[in-house]
Amino acid sequence: MSSRREFLSAALATQIPVQKAANVSHIQIKADKFYFNGRATYAGRVWKGHSIEGLLLNSRVVQGIFDDENPQTVSRWAYPDTGKWDPNRNTDEFLAAMPQWRRHGLLGITLNLQGGSPQGYSKEQPWRNSAIAPDGSLKPAYMARLQRILENAKSMNMAVILGIFYFGQDEYLANEDAVRKAVRETIRFLQRGGHWHVLVEIANECDNRSYQQPLIQAPRIHELIALAKSITTAGLRHYVSASFNGGSIPHSNVVKEADFLLMHGNGVRDPKRITQMVEQARRVEGYRPMPIVFNEDDHFDFDKPENNFVAAITAGASWGYFDPGASDYADGYQCPPVNWGINTDRKKAFFRLVAEMSGARV
Image 1 (cartoon, helix red, strand yellow):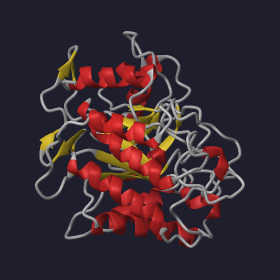
Image 2: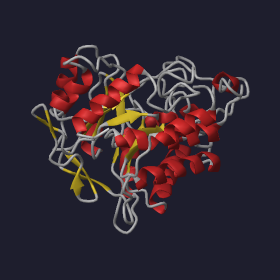
Image 3: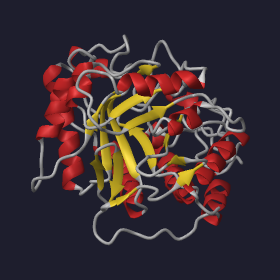
Image 4: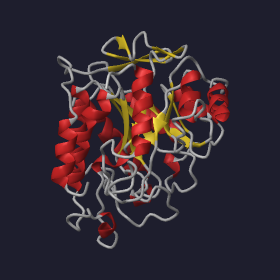
């Protein structure tokens, strides 16, 4: 499927009406479960003897607001039908795909103000993809695209896990004051917009050695979690956490400060290790009943009885699909130009399992 018109037509053809929240869509955490507007997610749902209630089945789709301000690299993301990159087209097609994801029972998506590697995995990141200016202020064009996605998610009672920082882009921030300003402005943007369906991820994989800003690194990331939590509107605040490298267990300073735990399954080939990670996280100093969410895992095998997705669910943790793709406008959900539809065998297999687990009628 090579043209924008074809993509949008196909996406719109699969949409079904989704009930909108009356005024505000509010995600809540009670012990180790998520709630929307006072009702547990997947309320009462049991899959193969395992409760799905209170979980957040999710997908990593961090490039929903992607752009590249580096003229030397932007041509890498050109659409095959136009030969050009178009950030607004990218967001348009993202929006068109969202109802189809929701129809299959997906309740959570992960975005990031600094995206993720548009090559899937990268040692060097010469591109410039950041909604955050060097002084920590937020760039209007990026935030306008984000606003559209957040409003769409709100209308469908979908949660957004919004990351602020990503390694490979954090070095463009001037200093620690800029880092703190970015956190404050992000939280204020969310609260002014009434985006209470958003969970905040201060940084993607805060223990990654590529981070240049010390305040974003694992030993001090709890300071930014506390800062974000301190900002309130009418007595309300956002739930905040930070994620860790694939296979890593959250550190105690984060467990003590965070409202929920974020882990990644990248590099975890044995599903039994996923179960062990959940068990180990619950033994970290500072843990109390709180949701555990995998929001990035590049392992699949959805047709097999044992896979990382199933292992997480059976351990009482939420799980998130990470399919990087190959910048071919077909595969994956991370390497631009992205086809945001459910268009490949791998995507179809994931969403079939989501629908089966959630009880969605597709």
